[in-house]
Image (tube, rainbow, N blue to C red; front, side, top):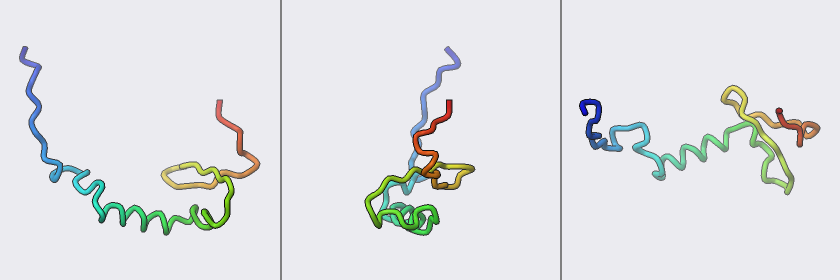
Length: 71
């Protein structure tokens, strides 16, 4: 069967996930989260907040809209 080929071994260091899980990657994600405007005030008091991702940006969902879902 000519269409079946053996997969070649790929070295992760040559991929876009080479640094996944490293201390550097964790620090980068933490620093990015700390500068996200949508997270300001989160964790100061116990409450419930809902967020959406719209056009790759984090948006706080209005409290009046909690519980309303798309159909």
